Length: 251
Image (cartoon, rainbow, N blue to C red; front, side, top):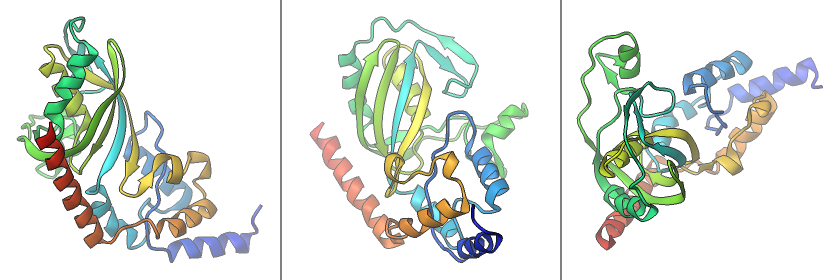
């Protein structure tokens, strides 16, 4: 066990760091819940020092998800936490149908964000307003980019997708829209982010048992080499958009 003076030294070192580190968020708790747990343990946030200013840039970089969707049921939140709002047949949907329909959702597309989201109306999150029973105006469709989208598995009514997309993209909206396109309905049953910018789940994300000052210091120090500059991140987005256009033209 580290001595008291050693712990103080580590804490001071953590305070002097500037950067980001990745964590593994378990299914269930929200991002806010995870941050509150980290604050309780370390009195720090995931973005440390100047790293908090880097977060917006990092979130705008490409990210990857693996999601399990379920055909036949739609919910008000577009995921398994919501209330079922619609039930439809899905027996007519084949794997070929699913793969063919995915072509419509690759490249630069327009997407309508879900009502239950972190987007704001009059300074408050839409999801919070809906839960309070207040009137909420749906946000208009907006441009988003999907770099790659493929079927990993299909076992009706469940299907697994691999998605790589840009900032502002909602996988829940994708799955909801897929259900409609296939003359049925669907919602997200499970969702996991496997990559955010240069950080990957397997290589860089800290598991909860490692949310300690010692491990976070190590993670931030090693993460410094991974963090692209603002210019590099912008170039990444531009290059990725160019590639997505080529994919879109090819399909």
